[in-house]
Each structure stands twice: as structure tokens, then as C-alpha cells.
Length: 105
Image (cartoon, rainbow, N blue to C red; front, side):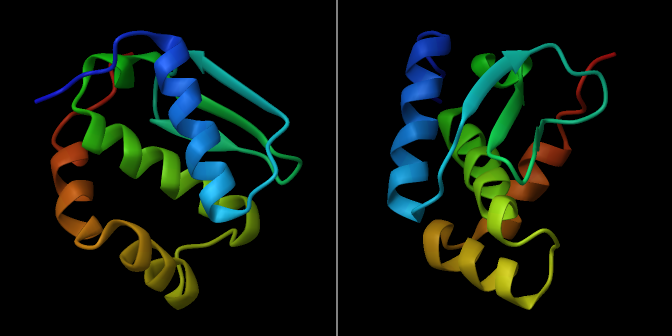
């Protein structure tokens, strides 16, 4: 398991994925969140749960891609699922791993 070195490494990864997915982002926040792993606005503001920094980078990548895709696709429909599969392969398995780690709070 490889965790993130620091907040900046995580933010760099968010920017890399945003460029790859052609998503414009305005701001990236990493902060305590009590009930979810991340959130996004259609304006391109992303917030990530700071607990992700201590987790496997594969789980972080899942949350990053999940949120970035929501900037353009605001639901979990067929298009969103096909984009997740295109970029992360077996994303359902990663989702199950993440769901076994409940955010504190």
C-alpha cells in the first residue's frame, strides 16, 4: 500500500487527472469531512476528506476521478459508469474497498 506523502502530492494528482479528463477546476480543498469522501461544484471547486491522505493512493485516485467526472456528469448513470470503467477499469472493486472505510465524524 502506498499512501500520499502530503497534501501537495494529492493536489498534484488531482490536477493531473483533471488535465487527463479535460475538466476545468477552480480550487482544491483538503479538509475534515464528517460524512463523505469528497464533494464538487459545477463551478469546479473540489473538496476532499483529509482522511484520504492516509489511505492507499488507488483509493484516492478513485475518489479524484469520481468527483472530476461529476463536474460534467452530475449523476451515477450509464455515461458516468462507462467513463469510470474507461479510466479506472474495475472501479466497482475499488469502490467496495473504499466503502469498508467509513469516514469518521
